[in-house]
Structure formats: C-alpha cells, structure tokens
Length: 123
Image (tube, rainbow, N blue to C red):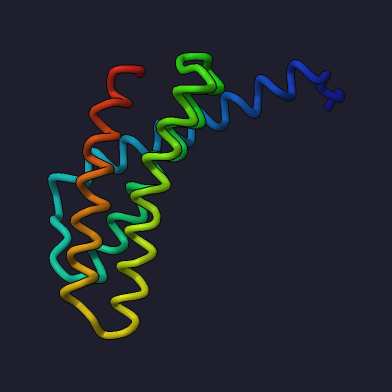
C-alpha cells in the first residue's frame, strides 16, 4: 500500500467524518419514531446523543464550507447552552432531584429542537 499525500489523507478523513455523521443521522431519525424515551435516564441519554449529533453536524457543515466561522460560533454557543442544561440535569439527577433534572432536560430539548430546525436549512 502506498503512502497517501496530504490531500488524499485529508479527503479520506473528511469522507469518514461525513459517513459517520450520515450514519448517526440515519440512526437518530430512524429510531426517533420507534421508542420514546420514558425514564429520566433514557431522556438524559437521548439528550446526550442529540447533543453529540448536533455538535458533529455543526462541525461537518463547517468542514464542508456550508456555514461560515461566525455562523459556526453562533451555533456552537447555542449547543453549549443545551450542553450546560444536560450537565445540570445530570448533576440534579445524581443529587436525587428528579424534578429539576426533568426541567433542565426540557430546556436542553427545546434548544436542540431549535438548532435542528436551523441546521436543516444548511444541509
């Protein structure tokens, strides 16, 4: 096997990132209608997975040149807000405060749904 030059290596990395994101999007959207998260732990895991998919989509859109650096920063700031809410929910759940955890997860879900709508416009 020959050594790849920088451009070939970068292209393969870029293609792998796109493939991974596509698989994640397919799994997320295909599973979304199958099982609705019911327990607090399921809701936390669902929010964490959605958050990861959101960050990956933002990164991939930037790499593909579909969004500017400024737009990427704006989207990451919004995603960071959701991440902070998920972290707060995890902390509240660890302290046994289910009510606060559910409230924080609702905040995170609202932010993520808004981000999903924005990101659809750039795909």
